[in-house]
Amino acid sequence: MATDAFEEIAETFEFLDDWEDRYRHVIELGRAMPPLDEALKVPATKVTGCASQVWLVPRIEGTGPEAQFGFDGDSDAMIVKGLIAILRALYGGLSVAEVGRVDAAAEMARLGLDEHLSSQRSNGLRAMVQRVRETAALAAA
Image (cartoon, rainbow, N blue to C red; front, side, top):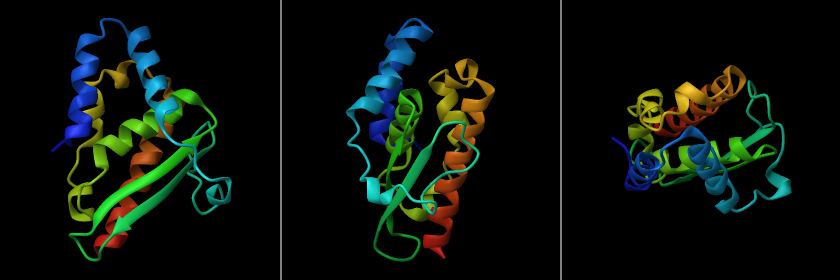
């Protein structure tokens, strides 16, 4: 159930032969994201469970289960900012009801990230996915 934007990232990863190239690409994805307004970097938007500082700000258009989901985000670590960019591609434009049906672990495994992230980064990624899922579930109710 991946979005076109995520499929594009997955296709790019297929052409990158080694982990260092993939790592650099993740960082490039993060650099391409617009910075989050400092006023939005507040405790309510901060994701706990991440070794780095991470903020996710949901953007939900509409109401109920068919509302369109998206979010903005930022981190003080470039690799994490890249992971945010990948999650934005994975979830952006889905309905809030569809967000809960995405198997983020399986989709991220397609990129080979599960094998190369440190345990702290993996825990942070899970915390970000959990925040996205919880936010979408609340909006769908």
